Length: 349
Image 1: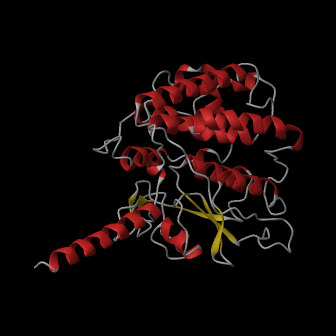
Image 2: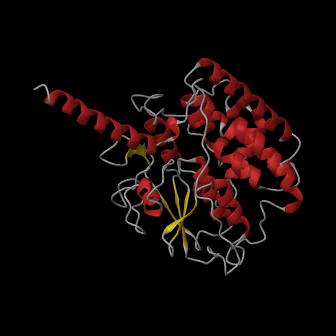
Image 3: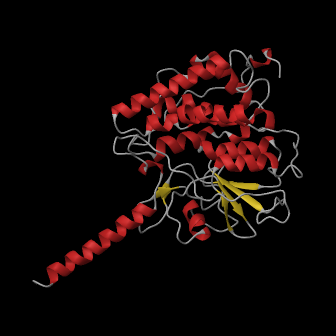
């Protein structure tokens, strides 16, 4: 008995170490907290580029690449928006996961993106017919045995080399904007034109910090101070956008750009999710006349509405963050009609 007790403790300690090590490797956005209680998003990992150069490692070939997304995720949705409005959805196919996070492995507690087992299990989601993966995590492990980051979407997958090309949405949309123009249905649509790039970059910087990531900094904050600071920055940025859009149709002027798509994916989720779930309720999107009509205007761009699956969006946020919404109850409203008339055509375009 004297020898058995320390051995048992040793075995227990070893198992605990293994569990902690596994859990440390299998992370999600819910783990990205500072000691002050603030949410800090870590950068993406796979950063290779597809090129129009046929001699590159990842040449822009039709049918070679696959995009894994979640309709719920704004970062993935902006990539899906590019597929649709650039007319690339026939050249690059895509698969969406189920909206609510589930266990990704039996031997640890990581919760993440999971594929349905059948086509009918969750409308809008589909099994991974390409690799037979059950989870997005499995795709990362297939691409890299030593991967230790988050298992995020979007994932731009190379069917030929069976690996992840890129998982950074900002870089994926830049590739989709230029590198596939020879096979795009709308090659003349340039969402990152050279004469506007400096302005777009400046807009992206404060819109990302204050709005795109700002809602997450509000929702995932664990202390009052970081939440209030994030909310202050969020509404300062929204007020700034409202002022800009009172003078012009789009955020950069009279031309649709990347900055609009990046802003849209947050705005379309604002009243349905962020106002309630992330405590961004100081002012609703519907209380901003210019921003609200602008969101309807973008939603009505051909192809854009197909990238918005509000059922997936609401199921994910209200069902995947138990520390915020422990019972997983999904609010019934507000069910906004974004196909309703808007006033943005009062500006030249």
